[in-house]
Amino acid sequence: MKVFVMAVAGIQLLFACCYDYRSSRIPNALVFSMIVWGVLGETVSAGWLGAVHYLGIVCLIWGVFFPLFCLRMLGAGDVKLLGATAGFLRDTEILPFCFGVFVAAALVSVCITLARRETGRRLCIFADYVRECVRSGRVLPYQSQGTRESGGICLSGPVLISFLLICIKGGYFEF
Image (cartoon, rainbow, N blue to C red; front, side):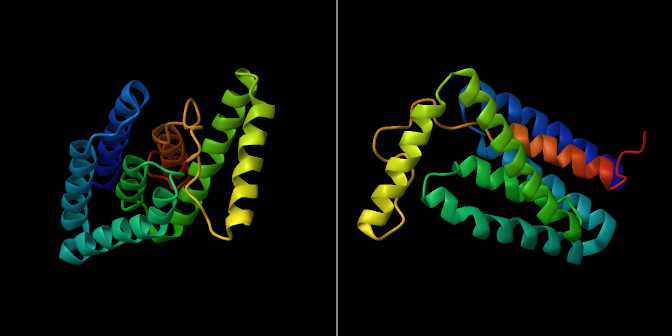
C-alpha cells in the first residue's frame, strides 16, 4: 500500500513541477489534493493516528519554513509543497529530504547563474542585501530593492528530485 501512496505522491509532484515551471505558481488545489491523499494513505496504513502524524509533519514543516516565506526567500507554494511532501516520509527521512531539496536548489541556481553569466551581478546583489541588513540592524526581505527579475528558481523540481532520491534510498521503489 505504501508503494502505491508514494507513487501517487510522486505523480502529484510531477504535476506540481509542470505548473510551477510553466507559470511560477503551484496551485493550492494541487497541494490540497496531496494533503488529502497523504491523510487517506496514512489513515489506511496506520489509522487515525497516522493521519494526525501526517498533518503534524505538514504543519511542522510549514512552521519551520514560514520565516523564509516572510523574508521572500521561498514562495508560499514552495513552503506548502515542502510540507505536503515531507508528510509522506518517515521521520528519519525528513531532515535528509529538506537538506536534499536545498542542495538541489543551490546546484540549479548555480547552473542558471553560470549559464546566464550573471555571477558577478548576483554576488553584488547579495552583498548589497547583506550590507543593508547590517546597516539597518535587522533581517530584511530578500530582493526587496527591485531585484526580483530572474532571481528565483522553481523549488518544485528540487522537491521532486529529493523525494525520488529518498524513495529510492528508503526502499519504497525496488528496482
